[in-house]
Length: 609
Ligand code: AGP
Image (cartoon, rainbow, N blue to C red; front, side, top):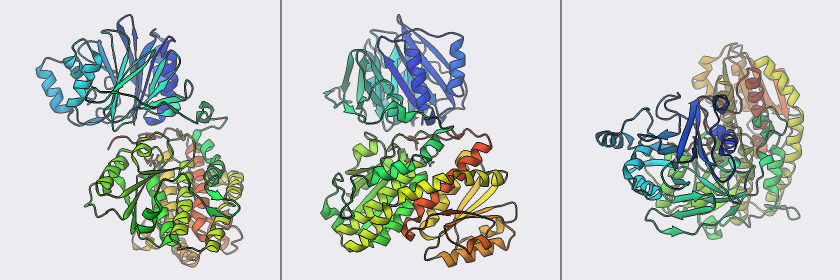
């Protein structure tokens, strides 16, 4: 959701905060602001819109100072406007706060503070924080923050700066992520890693309700009781170049063209190339847990939910254990019917999605073993899960996920083969057959990416339509859902994913020549059924674009347009068929002039409910 950045050192803070905010902008871009401390005076500069608007504002007066906080907003409480933009200050500009999260009890706190004589100027929940800290302040900012967080309910990552007392930043978090960057004679803080990589790759991950007091010489961290904590400094393997566009027009396009690398990353060290068997030595999931598991629950949100759905088909096919898939946001309020012999798999690129973190806590209480599939080392899910499998996609900046989706699918394939090996549901030659084909997937993806110009041509033909139906069947149904989501979220065109078999039970009523259909129809065991569904659609004069298998002579006579993907095993088609759908959505959105990397109303990591 929102992005927070902070700096304290001997360099000018503004350029560092602006650079950090640009790296965080994918977390929210409704408004932005900074607060700079110098000579016991804080200057706040903030405005509605993207970071570029803030830069324009700063051209008319650049605050000087070596300590400051910055914020880019995804609006939850109060419209995107200058007044609701962060940072927020108390009754005077002595205590200033930036916040990511939701203060659920802000109304009663606000009423209490108004009775104490505090004046509020914004509609935000956040503004109660500087007033609350102000009312708890007795010459020690850290203690004032410690007392104040005892009174707030909800999720928060907060940065506090004050013109009272020595130069320091005080930060705390609960639910929302916050990372401290360790420099030489300077310190940093940020909502996530990419914002720090230009300055340091040595970081400290703040735990729940911990409070850190940061000066240019270092950091002191206490728990909510005031006990001093020793925290590890973690070295991050990513570098800043990985967070640049590297000559691509958009991060999304760069990240799609990194998918071959992501697939190779996931095969490396997880497949024994000589025996063609899966080896998950870094997966701390006890063998007895794998042997005894009676059911698997996969929980996730958004696109990660669609990989979870594909995971159901893969796991049930290869290990024959019933798999339940649910949206984390729904699962957490369902009656929990899971126990010790059930494995919970949480899928989250960011590792910070609030609903998935809440589902983790619910499954833990039920005694289920938690396996997290995530992309971000040090993220909440990677720290809270019992076992973790990293999807090795590298930093993903484009709000619409692409390469992480591929990384998640690769993890589910390798994990399923590993479970099948441990539970002996597949013999070595069956495992070898799938592993051999999996090892050919990188070349197949190269072939698809080389055909991008064909997808550009298709997008030039289809970008003018306002509604799309995406169809798939069996293991390709989740890919139809993902294809539709990609188009929706970056081009704002209405698109619906549907299982091809269900279409005639309703959505077929929508169809006419203004409502194109994109259908995933590889030559797998249900090919003939999907062909029937295509004929039902064509009978309504609908324009049909097929994602089909190379060498399929029949399909060209049935559909209007076809994009061919390499032939592979039925169970592996999802990882090939999603890529042309990612590119199709990208080129349509680009043709429509959309801000592909920062689509309206979205954020890369949803850290509030
Ligand atoms: C996908 O393109 C979106 N960015 C969104 O649906 C995303 O998949 C969802 O918010 C889940 O995020 P996570 O994988 O980081 O938990």
